[in-house]
Image (tube, rainbow, N blue to C red; front, side):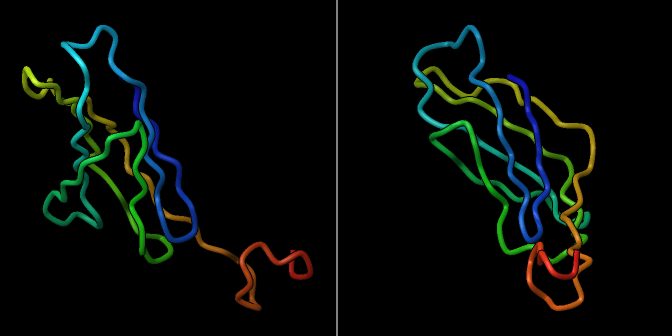
Length: 102
């Protein structure tokens, strides 16, 4: 699996590839991450993507791991070793990507 994390204004999109080979049919993925150094937060996904929502601008998301689970159990986690920070919109009017202020 290969993890990528893409920052947005108020979220971070985490995507990965299905492991090859798999140890059976993947039933779900377990995603863990920290927000601004908090304790690890854990979520699940049945697809190869997950979005961390409702974040403020300049929020750090780190310690991202993804593990694939099958009927045989959960595989070893893959870790993204860098911190991703949500974007800050420099527009003064408050409209995201405003064409006038840019």
